Image (tube, rainbow, N blue to C red):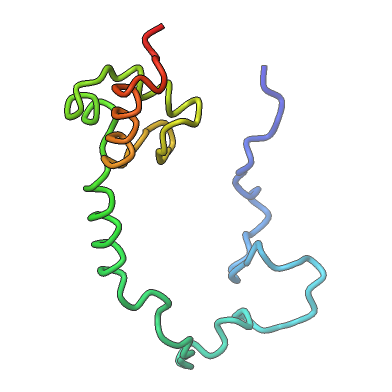
Length: 129
């Protein structure tokens, strides 16, 4: 059983609801009689905040996308360099392979993967164990 009031109750027959506009953001002890808030007092006044901060955003986006296009996922790197993917992921987690982590995705430079593969093939460190 819900004993709380519903929040809206119709005025009783002997009472009238107020006809003036009520702003719930105003405090109860407000002594101002203005009907519009101070911020809206002069809506025609234009504020010049200057030029946008990002002026050539397209160039930055294109540079970032070209850099990302040069990077490989572990699956792509494994296919390109004929090496098991788990070796690449293990080398990243151990800090032996340079990588970029974006949330849960790994991005690898082809040159870093090539150097890593050469070190494995040269017998510098065997990771098949």
